[in-house]
Image (cartoon, rainbow, N blue to C red; front, top):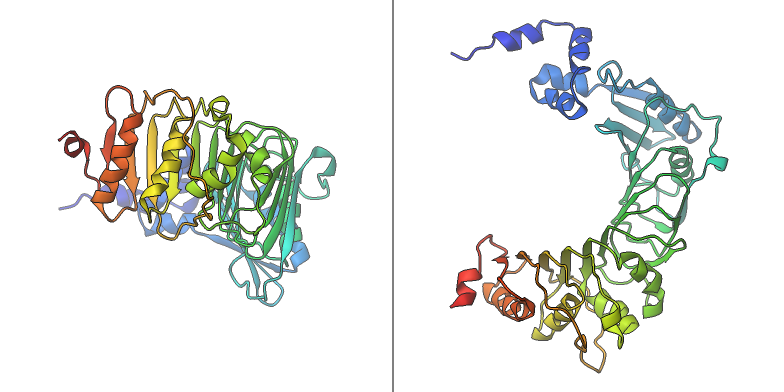
Length: 394
């Protein structure tokens, strides 16, 4: 018979006592109590429901944060549902480790118009009329901002002066984004904002930049070196007249990255024309992990990857992703020129293929890659989880 004495003991306690117990747990462990039973889950899922106008959103969010007690997380709901206008709705959720999610997608049925966003984290423009919350937001997830709520989002974000990590996702209609940070912003993630054509960054402390969508005109006004860069432009460019020189400033920010996600067409169309013929002077000395995205429709595509690897002497892990829908830039008349001088790859420990449907294609690519490797062969994992090492040695 299952022992239910412990569950009965907690089940008979009032909410106030349960909240006091949770207050002694670390944030992650506290949140895991929601998995114990329906009773615990209901405690965590309580929602504050408010109504007002679009102009009231900033104040409602500020009040919501100010009421939250991080040491006693069950004393006040972690979720806010704010209804404004006829169909507008905002869902705000406080998560562990000082995270806040603002989701404007619910009830957002207006015809989308193009708009821009400006986030300026400078102390002199902070609106001190807003209530400063006791809960310090360090990570903000901003989802589905529309042209009707863009000014609201800008007001909220610019007042989060302790913000270190900003995630912007699924903002349909967003065409222009400007971010100025003189404070602590270290991580910026932009996902699936498919209308975005211009990104202006005025920040010197950014260490992680992750972008998924169409290639925008990116202008990093202040110089900074990224440790982690994801440039997932497999959907192609957002404009037709892209030139290699337009990418030069971005290229300088990723040169010293330790982790990099890159599409083949970006290297061939934008990076290689900028560094050739002096490619031996442009080396990714610190790169340890590379995620390479391409569609392998013909045998020549491997040339770009081979050329890039010759610029990465410290590489330890290589992930080769095959996406049949990934964009391919028009090929130049001249073939990809191999790097003139290079150091053999000596530290590679893993090659992992992803998205391949044919193991013969994986073997073909792997055979070309191992010619660059000095010393012991790395583990070579296929898309289905098996390993190619033994087959290649035959």
